[in-house]
Length: 167
Image (cartoon, helix red, strand yellow):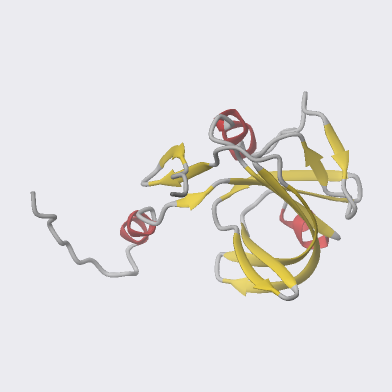
């Protein structure tokens, strides 16, 4: 079957979102803490920025209930989720409430809550913040990594799926 090509204006938010969903991404839980307020959310905007210095980025919505905490935090932790951790996605996509109830957490070097989950974790010190339209782009300098390994979780076309394994 030959795919049908449909063109729409890039200003149509639903069409733009649908087109972007064709890009398969990893799934991460990002955590931070400022003034005793822990925050956490699911991000699929996580990306590497630089190897020297080691920098990563992710984006937080300006509508996020924890935006002020994200912007004031000394750093953040990125937990790259394992294929079997879909429950963490449900927990950290909830709006409001204490997402950390029942989870063991340890404060990291920047105060960000470190969770016992994921195939890899990066601790990052806040480095820069940039305007990203309806989001803020947060860049962090990686100060520690932890890599227990395993199969990663991925997101594509609105569905969670195990990430493809390398050859």
